[in-house]
Each structure stands twice: as C-alpha cells, then as structure tokens.
Image (tube, rainbow, N blue to C red; front, side, top):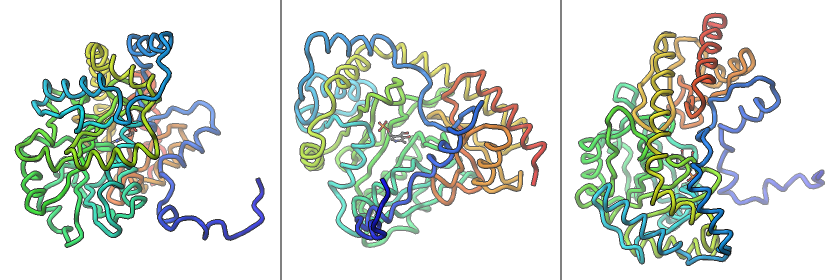
Length: 395
Ligand code: PLP
C-alpha cells in the first residue's frame, strides 16, 4: 500500500520506535536473493521434530483435542515439567501455582519483563546475548543496561563486572547460559558468586535456560533456580524449540514464585489466552519419551561443534571453544574487517551467511556468530569458503 501521510512514524509508540529491527534479519534478506548460499545464520535445529512427538500431536488431533486449555497450560504438561525439574535439578515447583506454559520462551520473556518492570527500572544484561533481551526490556518500559562479558574470561560474567553498573533503579539481572551467541556456560562456582550478588542487591533474576539441555564435553548445566536461596527470586525460562527441534511449535514455559507467576498469567490470559493445545501435547510427549532423540541430536551437534571449532582454529582465527548451545563466535579482527563488513563481504564473495557479532550487543564487535545446527557437509563447505575468503580478501 502506498502511504499518503508522512507522519505515521510519529504516531507509533515511542517504545516501539526506540527499538531497532533485529540485526540478524538484514543478512537473510540479502541472502534470500542469492543462489547457492550456505547459511550458518539461523539459530534453529536442522532436524525435523522427532516422529513420536509429531505422532502424539497427530493422535491428539484425531481424538479431537482442538480446544483451549487452562490459561496456565494442560495440568499433565505442567506435572511433567515439575517432574523433570525435580529429577534433573532437584528443585521443586508446584504445577498449580509455579508454572506457566507459554508460546515459546519468547512470550515468557516478554511476560516476565512486563510483569515486573516499572518505567525506568533497570535490567542488567550481560552481553553478547540473544537479540530479544534488550528489545523486550525497552518494550516493557525498562532500561537495558549492557554489561560486556570478556573473551579472556570465556564470555562468563562476574559480580565485579556487574557491580559497576548497579544503580538505585537496578531491579533485574537477565542471564542466558548456555549462551547465544558465544556458546559460553557458567560453572556452579561462577553462578554461586552471581547468586550472592543478586542477593546483595535484592535483584530478581530472569534466567533463560533454553539451551540447558545442550552442553558438551561432560559439562553439566547448572540450573540457577536450584542454587541455594535462589528459587524464590528467579524466573526460570525454558522451552522445547532447541532441545527437541520444535521451533515451529512455539512452546515454552516459565517457572517462578506464585506471586510473579500469577502476574505473568494475568497478562498471558488477556493477550494469549493459552498456548496451542496441539503444541502442548507434543511437548508432553517430548518430556515423557523424547530423551533418546534429544541425546542423539546432541551428539550430532557435538560432532559438528568439534569440526567447526577445529576449522576456525586451523584458519588462524582466535576462537572460544563453545561449551553449550549450537553457536560459535570466532574473532575476525585479524582480517582487518569489522563484524558487519566481514559478514557482508563474505556473503557477496563466497555466499556464506553468518551474523555479525554486533547484532548481539556492541561488545560483539570483532566477532561473527555461526550456527552449527546444520549438516556436516554444509559446515565443511562453509569452512572451505570462509578460508578462501580470508586468504583472498584480507584488508
Ligand atoms: N532465548 C534464546 C537464548 C534463544 O536463542 C531463542 C531463540 O533463538 C529464544 C530464547 C526464543 O525461543 P523460543 O523459540 O522458545 O521462543
């Protein structure tokens, strides 16, 4: 449609105008116009959801499960979630009051921030991090306060680094480990220090643990809420998109104290009503019988992780060896390009799409994010092209 007025932008909400479009999309729009592109760009498993999960959903439809569910989600699903947390992490959540099933972690993140932020409240966000953290904070009326995590410290965040950013308005600490885009994890000792920090400043901690089931090399994921005294002040977010290759199902959940969860449920009730019943049935099957399929995908990601890490290291790029999620974040400063220039020139010259590190915060400059949730063949070909690019296009 051709717009006849010029002031539509001014009529939009200032909060929306304050948010820039995601830096990830730009490159995909360019890549979509090209032939023969290998994409290491999207943060999405290349596997189709395991068949038993799809079958459970089909069976549910055959049986006529097509209605709304309780606002908080199917009770059986909430019971499965509670059982999984009790078994895996030894932390107890009551299905009636402490669990809310959402439309992905994306919705849960939005609800959590909207439920707790007053205009001007500050949210400490270690960066580099997932693109939605700062945007959702702004949209909820809060102020995102980025805190750079350092490569020298394997992209882990420390209380000392956070301390320097605390003000009277600091209300929330938002962490996401295993981390997108760096593949960093936090050890129990690291998180215990963060727990002391959260307690010292009486912060609510939002912990996005969507990659918690994807860790490598014997590293065990540490659930933040399971640390001593942390359960009550933590809003724990998790979902099915990554671990079970269920991105399109749009299903996740939030766990937390009954008061905060009731507030989040209130927003969810009026804006979403409930998560789709078919997706909830698939999620239930994933928790009941999806473990074998999850482990199989995990070991395949691990194979790819080692291939891509070796590839970048052999090319001479400094590279943190990822310990979780399915991303790697090589340092490309030795090529003379900025992150943006590198991503754009590589795409034009060699038809490989990846994401500039700056999409994940200003401190991502000098890096690019590559997803290895793609086949070994594609990764090998992409590595050969990147090597070629670096040899022939040094600035
Ligand atoms: N959190 C992180 C760290 C992510 O990387 C993503 C997706 O890439 C999400 C949340 C969104 O997950 P969902 O598909 O459950 O909305």
